Length: 347
Image (cartoon, rainbow, N blue to C red; front, side, top):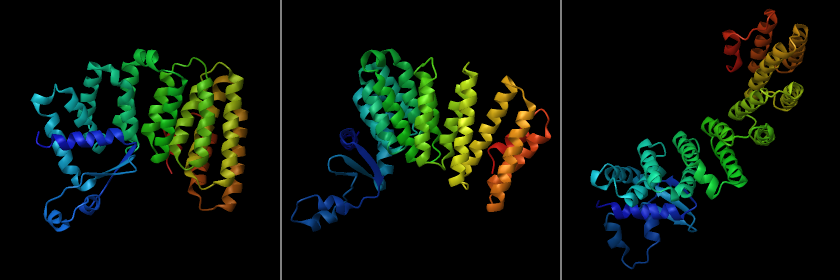
């Protein structure tokens, strides 16, 4: 417990600041912040800089001292005589998780603390949001948030569940997806959350399509966003409004074609086009079963690709898509087999 004052101080600093990061810090930063006449005497002492604060909002943790702080935190949380001390456990796990966001032991300790005192549910959500700024792709943080929403759903509704908290969660997903490319952890959490909201109609999914389109306009090369869009389209396809589903699929088809005119070298657009094509074929087979229409659709695609190939002969995405169309045309039943799936997401 000799280093407990340091852990407690770091926890208080992290709790008060708005954002933090981990960078190498020199002892000179510490010395420049101290008024003293005898700098030589201080230089001779073994001074450790653990953090520095800027504008009382941004905290920088020293990466050079990370190992020692983490070891001290582990000593505390695994010390049997302290496991029932809620304050010490809360502060120690806060510090350790800011360094190691995937520490499952810490998250389990914090779950136990919440079950003992559920008055801190809101502050726990704020802590996870705080750490996500540093680790936007942390699967354990998103899992902890999902656990809170499921375990304290009644409490959240009675205390502060409004349309704003739904919007805040979606904004959080937007930010984490932007901070780290191909952030499937963030998009997976978003899928779970819109299902958790228990919307019986498709308004939420339609609004998500619009919102996702705005996000993709800025991050057009990030296929994780298109993967989420595929999920939205596939979910809306379960609607009984077959006319609307068909219009949606062709709208996505046309939108993708327009984007390809400007970004023909983007792999994400070509993969999404393959997916929409297969969803279209699936829809036509289920509700119209017009083989001639499917053949015409595939042949028109091949003609379109021929135009692209003349201009971009080395584009491997076009050639891969061309192979997919050829295989589909060779099969009179347009079956989606393993060979089709092998061409769906590979380059």
